[in-house]
Length: 324
Figure 1 (tube, rainbow, N blue to C red):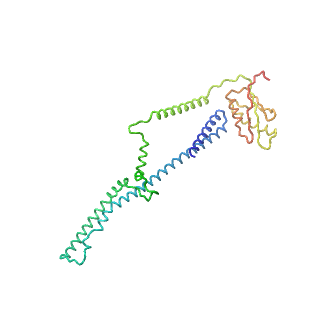
Figure 2: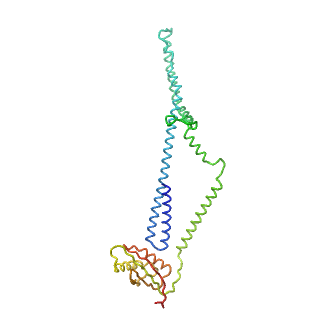
Figure 3: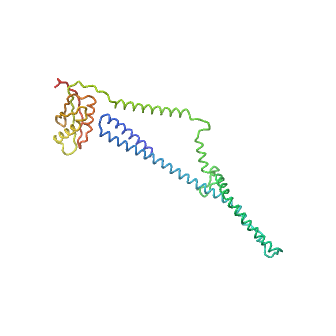
């Protein structure tokens, strides 16, 4: 699902970016701004999807690491308990002579009792010192032996199926990761290197072509003068709504034409539109417009923001002084 969203977002971003460039070239600023906003929204959406994907993978890795750490701690405690069992057994059988029958008599019982008390105290001190210094070593040894310990059969539903199941999961994952690595001393394959080089060269060529094309389209050049006497522009006004009268069409055409008078290099101050009927209007511009001014005027007229009105440039042509 996430891949489909990536593909859809990439297609939408490509389309929005393409039309953004097209509308900028046509001097249609409102449509260019809409495409720019759409492109920005899609970029934010793609960035959010990529960020969520990264966060999800980080959470999975953290959960996996916690699970492995808990299993390792459990095995460490199990091994530590096994290491301490002989010491506990020896503690239970300490001073076995005290368990002898009481009927037997000894000659130096008071002396033996005092000596036993003293020796017991010394042994207790030695035992405490030994246990205090041996705990870190025992835990360190248990941690080193934990990787060799078998997992608890109670944690698996059916028990281990084969000897490989008795191995440490972390060690198995490490072996799987090692299997994916190339052999020691082997470099990257020639095929992969060639593919990467080809893709990088194509991307560089496309980027260079895009930059050169945009620079050529947006370069400021000295325009060629139009030798014609005038330029005629025929437009059609389409309205949406209940009021579709001729007066409403005329008013809409005049408003759009007046808003676009400053879009050319020479302001169209004394140029008016003539009504041709059926929503068609014509205007004659003197002197004749150059190619760049004509493009700017067409883009402004077709990109008008008048509510419930749309203007379309039907025809454009140059007229000489002797034409009727």
